[in-house]
Amino acid sequence: MKTLKILAVDDHQMTMIGYKYILEDAEFDDFTVAMEMATTFEEGKQKIEQSVANSDLFDLILLDIQLSPVVDGVPSTGQDLGVIARNISPTSKIVFLSSFSDNYRINSILRTVNPEGYMVKTEINEIVLKEMVETVLTSPPYYTKKALIAIRNKMSTNIHLDDTDIKILYYLSVGTRTKDMGDYVPLSISAIENRKRQIKEIFGVENENDNALIASAKEKGFI
Image (cartoon, rainbow, N blue to C red; front, side, top):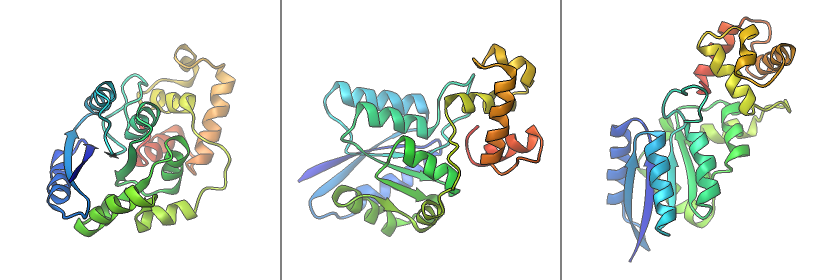
């Protein structure tokens, strides 16, 4: 019988142990499950890269979004890891399991990673996990109810966060003044101010200060 190789990347180890116990104990028709775990962005990246080097790719990669705080603007989220996995391990199925259910966050992941599934953690149980694996392998995508609602309520704005926007959010969050941000972001001060206005529109805080923007970005897992 085939063994389905799964990698779960989540900074909550007990959460992953629960997934591992459920999936390895579940009865599937054509395969058994063997699940590896990683608790950090770097550990997950290393495991994915090693599987590529060994030509032994993971069949399914489960990713939490908020793996660790962003440091010095360096990508370290589950979304960033999903982009890497999609590029170097294109046959692996990718499913996000997260507490975030806002429509902007989910649709951002759909654009950048195009995963085979998205599950909101509060909706996950033994039945849902098993159903997700079976669906993703045969007829993806798989979404839990809250994720599907968010996708249907896709934001109408055509403004999307890019790497520069993420850097601006990060440097704001660590107390960098806008007039000093040109040392870190390759834009003029006026361009940075314009970006900030656009980002505030995205997060619905266009009439509020930078602290409100930082709070909203943190709530949605961007910093």
